[in-house]
Length: 286
Image (tube, rainbow, N blue to C red):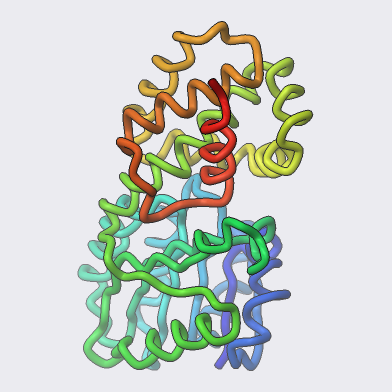
């Protein structure tokens, strides 16, 4: 089967091509970017059996809907794999477009892989957070997905020891990840706004600092697009105001107070490496 990655030159797209797809029986890996000439995109879209959209969050829903519309007349089965870290808005927009197009060959899978280029080692303490969160599917009559998804999830489990959960809807996914992933991104936002605090994070948690710096655009898009983030940002800001706002321990205290307010001491069912790192570190601050 041929797979087309839209956004293949991005960090996650390259990661998929290098570390994932060679292990899951892909015959040819094709790649385009948003700026690739439309004629070239159309040629590869027609050829690909599967289309994976691995672009940044900004404009993701619009791009996904455009791809659905461009595939509206396909005569052979085609599946779109949509993997934004904010799911609900994309799911609503794309399913509405699929219903409008009404092509019996065109299906879609909505999934958020909670692993990536900077967190894909089974030996890490936080490896338990690596999972695929499959929030929804849109199954066309002539393109059933059950066997395909079952084979893929089985391959991920046997090849990478990464499980796939299907217990969360797109809306539930966005709320839960806002309370974990999004809360950790509040620390990133603080870093971006205050260089002196960024230096403190760099000294104490250099891996987190480097990852957040490398993914600043993604983080800011997540903070802006996830509809539950105003609540999370408000909780973090309120906690931050109760500290001296000057030391690394103040960042951890603010994180811990916000985490307690949002998650009530419970473990997140959709966690991330950096959320877990910050949570563990915050427990050691008086």
